[in-house]
Length: 286
Image (cartoon, rainbow, N blue to C red; front, top):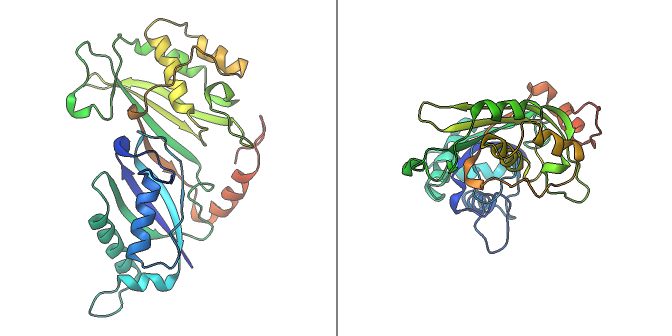
């Protein structure tokens, strides 16, 4: 078997999220089907992803891996004879481009280093959330990636409230609880800028995110930015540790997974092992 790393991007508008679901169009389902057909696999390809995204969420820096029989790569050889590994992988990218719909692109396939796990080896995930607060709405050409907020937002208030959420905490107040899953995360960066176009962009970086965490954090900050809540309110919600009815999860289409970061090759296996351990507050998150 050989482990392949896939670097990919997608417009989440017409997908029911990343994860494979019977009867629904998902990013994982589309790519697995394409890989299975192109490589003529005897059993379906099974992808592991760095970060599962919800329905409507986009990605331009998503990473996944898949294990396939080395012999299956021979399906990529040309009529003139066997290709080298790099040539085979380039051929796979081209064939995927011809099979997949335009709203999902695999732009690089490589042989993964020893110990690489797309999910557990990751050091961080970086998301961006985009909001337009102009009175007339957002640029129609950006409507699938920018949320319109129909009240003016105060950049200073957004950043002041965001700064109080940084660090390692139990983010249960901003997560949908899943059985057996920890809600302890290290929020490494959360800040806002206003671009020349007027669009506000939040950059959110953490070692990992629990379900709905980014959108819930953004939702709480938007309440501060428009003046409905105090700068201290999101941090107070965090401290209470339970879901607050005042926190509205921001719309999915403003969110995009921009980057997944990994350590040096020789540290991949160790990082994966450390990440699998159940986290506790104050413990090394890996």
